[in-house]
Length: 151
Image (cartoon, rainbow, N blue to C red; front, side, top):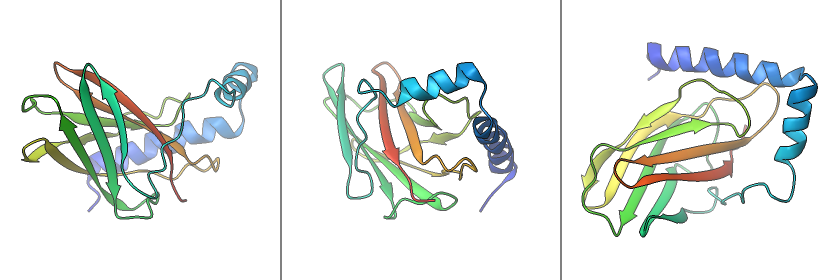
C-alpha cells in the first residue's frame, strides 16, 4: 500500500536519480570517487543477511522477500545482539553519493533483539542499483550497509 509519504518519497527520489543522468563535472568526480578501491564493501543481501558491529554491538540486516527488488513492498529485519532493548530505531535508505530525500523505515520491536519495518526501495531511472541502508540505533550509533537491488 503506497500512501502520500511514499508518493512524495518516490517523487524526490526520481528527481535525485534524474540529476545523476546528466551530471556536472563535480558530480562526475564524485561518481568516479565512488568506484575507487576505497569504496565500501557491498553485502550480498540477495543471498542472506549482512552483519556489522558498532560500539560492541552486533547488527544484522536482512531484507525480505528475496530477491530484493526495487518498487516492491519489502520487510526490513534488524537483529541486535550485545545491547539492551532499544528505543525506537529506524533505517534511512539512500544511494551512495546522492541526496535521495527522506526514505525512512521505522522499526518496531517484534521480540527480544529483533526489529522489523516495511518500506520500498525506488527504482532509479539512471540504472544505478547500489543502495545504502543506515541502521540508526539510539544511544548506540549508526551502521551502514551497502547492497545492490534488482531493478
